[in-house]
Length: 235
Ligand code: CA
Image (cartoon, rainbow, N blue to C red; front, side, top):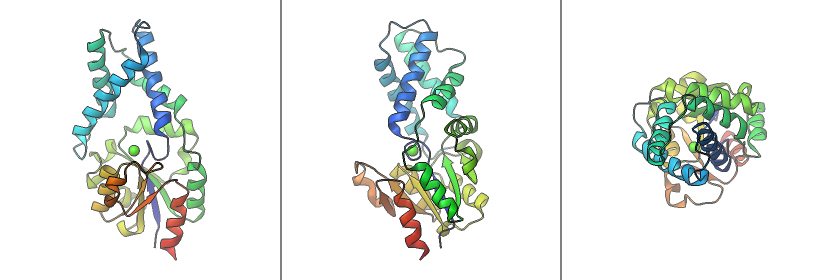
């Protein structure tokens, strides 16, 4: 019996394409503020993404640190290479650009609504700072839809550590086997959810993560398919 469905955020409820546009606009804003409009924003953005993913890959499953500190450090390293200074209000710029450019998957809203109409607990489990996820969800107009939001900041650990998943289950008051976790990262989302006994669903629209599908209980190419999985498990 499924009683709760939890979602990852970036790449699951909001698109990676939208996230790329957001990050590029953060870089543009940073360069403008730093008086370095002469630099190629796309090139600096690629350097920022590389620094950022290198830093985050070392942090998977570890004790959580503030994302704002990691993002700021990634930008600081890029700034050092390109010869500019990161503006004092970097994190405020980052949140503002996420609010402006974040983009929900087209079927995200309908999927959440249908699941809620089925009287399920619908929550988020995300490697995020609290201020970031709150601002972002409010800007998307979906903050009120969620019964619970569990962040790495609150849980004290990054996925795939079991703690964020356990904390979300405690909030929902459901057993692990009664809960689905939907994410786009086989190693963090599927492995983390399964480690506590939750049912894991991988969102892989293009099938590019096929080599890692074995980490997940279900693989879907769109969010709306999650409803079918829940109906199948309920009956
Ligand atoms: Ca994700």
